Length: 232
Image 1 (tube, one colour):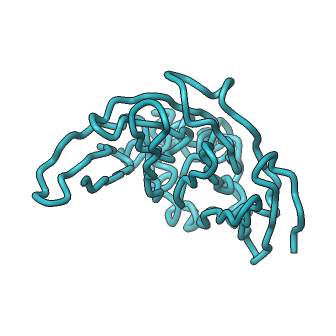
Image 2 (cartoon, one colour; image 1 turned 180 degrees about the horizontal axis):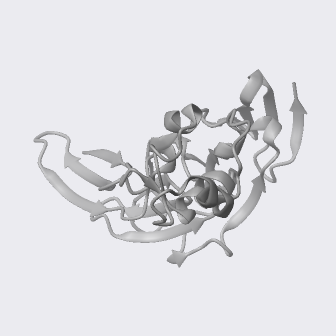
């Protein structure tokens, strides 16, 4: 057997497989461009084709061959930080990847326009903001979430990603094919924020999926098409 390690971090992200008996590394693939997340991979064993490791990461769900680490397919458009576990049922992969944009995280009084922020705070005119230049305490608390490359500076791309990036949702995906399957393999998507949270993983019982959203709202929906049964 294998022990799989998904290490998504601001620098040096990777996915690795180790022999469960000896601890010897079987393979490792670098995940360049994936910032920190807290998800756990899932193993999919289709009737045909190689077994897969399905990984929920920043802005992308990715499948790798379990035996070799080869990248098989990917699906773009999820949230910039993910948690939870991909759920496999009935030949589909269900991934809840949702995160509120940082602009909603108690950041009152902060101008969300980066160009105006540079005018106000960029003392050395390098088109970036340092902690010293940006003295707002709430920003210092969130700095590691915003600073994607770990250089202690915020640039326009990092600001846009954190403040206005896709929030994600709940995705039902056909875990097959090769390459980019974003346009071809989506069965349905739910982006109703009442039923989504950043941390929880969906649970499937029979033909019904249950989701726990922020604030404790429990949602039930049909696995087949994502239509709501009830939100309570």
